[in-house]
Image (tube, rainbow, N blue to C red; front, side, top):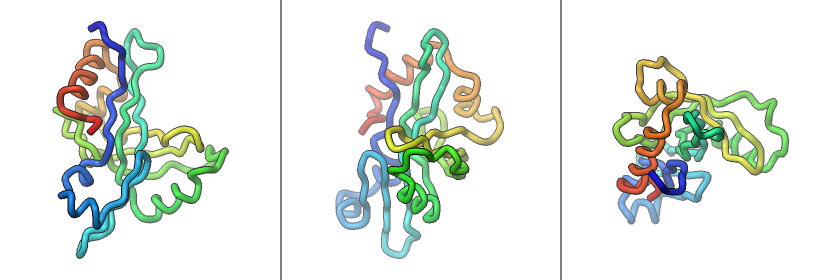
Length: 162
């Protein structure tokens, strides 16, 4: 394909996208990095946007999924506390779950570790679990350029960034 390569990105967590306009207006707060949903009678849900690196053959920088992680209240508070800190390398990773369903991969809810990267970079994710899940296997072993292009095409056709 002869197009500019764009990393596949989700603009918001799936739970936020699934809300009605009214519910979003009254019970959710979201920006490009953080999201909170507080529906009446339900536990508050917290989300942090992160990156998930994937090696791509022929592309030295690989690609980065821009994907949301569901976090617990304590993790959300800690992320807010450290958001602007310069050196967060000593902060242990947080256990999180993916909050987006990659088309064709059933990735929603996959467990991951989230590491804070500092004030100018989004947190980074490492998937947990076995390679028996196809998305975990791809992220760990890498993909070829054709597969990366397929993700870019899916991004354009199914609105990953909406």
